[in-house]
Image 1 (cartoon, helix red, strand yellow):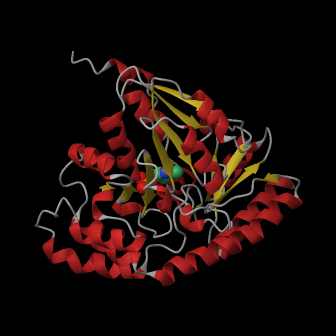
Image 2 (image 1 turned 90 degrees about the horizontal axis):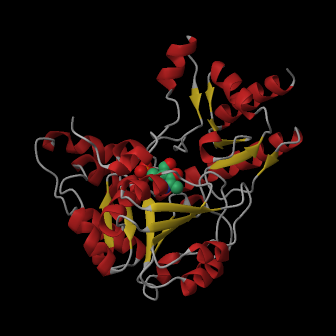
Length: 362
Ligand SMILES: Cc1ncc(COP(=O)(O)O)c(C=O)c1O
C-alpha cells in the first residue's frame, strides 16, 4: 500500500455549502435559492461574460502562464509594480502556494478564529501547527494574535472583513500589529470581501506594502466580480515574497477564460457599483428583520451577515433547506448557534424572510 504523508491524518475533508441541484433532487423542489457561499447574486460582470465568450475559438491554445495582460491591468488598478503580483487558481491556491513556499514541517501559523478554514488546512498539510486565537463572535484584539507568535511562527492569518463574522480591522490596528510582528513572519491579510466594506476606517493596505515587506494582501475575483466559477485570485506583496510564490506556482493554472474574464471584470465599474448597492440594501432589510425576532446580527463589512440564532440554529437551517433556501450553519466554524447568510437579491431576501418567519412562528 502506498502510504500518504503522515500530515494528512490530521486533515478533515473540506465541507462546502450544499449545491442547489443537490437540494432540488433531495426534496423534489423546483425553486431553490442558495445564500450560502457568498457568491454574487447579480451573477458575473456582463463585460466579463462578453470577454469569456470571445476566447472560445482559442481554447486549443495554452494560456500564457505569466498572464502579462492581466498582471499589467492589476498593477495599474492598484498602483503597484507588476513584480509585486502573483495569480492563483482562486485565492485558495494563493493560500496553498504560501504554504508550499514558506511553511515548513514543525513550524506554526497563527490566526484569528473563527475564520476561513483553508488557512488551517494549508498549515496542517505542510506539517505545521495552527494556533487559533479568538473570542467566538466577538472581535479579537490583534495584540492577542501578536502574543501567540513565537520563534516557530511562519505566517499570521488575518481575514478582514472576516468570514464568517464580518468583523474588520482598521489601518491603525493593522499597523500596530505589523510593527510588533518579527520581519520573518508573513502577515497574510485576506481581503476577499474588501470591496464590500463601507466603513470609513476600512483601510487601503496597499500603501503599507513598502514599509512592511512581510505583508501579503490576498484578493479574489470570486466575490464582487461574480467570477467564482472561473477560479482566479491574486496576491500583492514585496518582490521577494512574490518571486518565491511564482517559483512554486503550477505553470498553466490560470486558464485563458479566467484571464480574459478578469481583465474585463476589473474595468466593469458599473457591475461593481450595482453589486455594492444591492449589498447595502440587503443589510438594510435583513438586519432589522432578524433583530425584530430578537436575534443578534453581527455588524458586517462583507456580502453576508452572521446571525446568532441560539441552540435551534441547526433546526432552522434544516427547515430552510427543506423549503428550498440554502444558508450556512456555522458548526464547522466553531459557532454552532450562528448562521451565515449571503445577502441576496430583493426577491431572494424576501423568500428567506418569509420562511424564517414561518419557522419562528412554528
Ligand atoms: C475569506 C476567504 N478567502 C478566500 C476565499 C477563497 O476564494 P476563491 O478561492 O474563490 O478566490 C474565500 C471563499 O469563500 C473566503 O471566504
